[in-house]
Length: 343
View 1 (cartoon, rainbow, N blue to C red):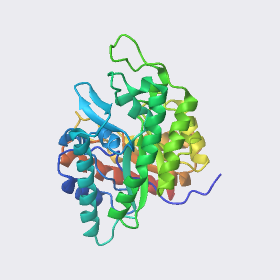
View 2: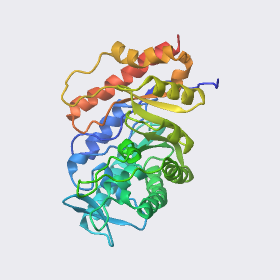
View 3: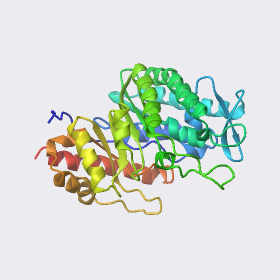
View 4: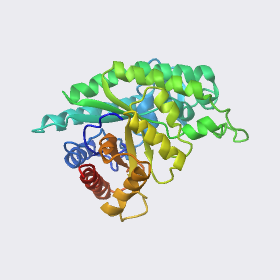
């Protein structure tokens, strides 16, 4: 079994409430101080272009998008929607630089989030209104375009946070439907054919390799727990997996244990954040959510050093105060797990 250095740390998944990037950056970096992992917030409340899909689409190299009533569409030339998305992201990077520049001790790491190539293809539409996922050539071009576009983005973020190791969370919220062939066509009468697992692995590998070449210190693929393709994520060369814990099967836990034993990172969505619920689980309850299956799998307490704890979902539906409370509880959860790790 490998050596497990480090300690349990906390981060969140990216979406954040409100429209003020300055307030978001200050809260996140204040709550997730060392050794935890602050992140560049996504603020979908700002509207078109600040949503996760539009944000990532604005990075595509050689491809342009706009917004139609049915969603984002690939187009021949850039328009106002794409410009708005790029402007919002540029503002966020400038704000990050200002906030980091005012800190006495800037964080050692910073996380950014990207929509992964398969969910990007599921969310973007072709000229005829069909999803890009329908067309093999479109899927290939999107993955290549994303891989080409991440380099300039990472360099801008690195310039805004000098010396910080860049961690990338590649979000694939639609992956189960992509692999299961359950995404509907534009008419709604059919579903799109399932994408082969080998193509999914290669698409991820292409983007992950580009992120590494651009200086990413860690790349983790984030997926829902339903039919989560952990084997494909690791085969693509990711440093780890991020997944909610609430409905993992015994087989999935065994796959996680094998990944941990091989030295991979495990981002555990251990804190349920039902948007309708005001109360968060108490720390001992949240600790047990991870610690019980950990013990049952026979993993040593020292292996907890591979873990980052996250909420089960993004926090955009919360108020800023309740989202802040989630970050506070996450760091308390990390502290509780670290006490177990130390024996």
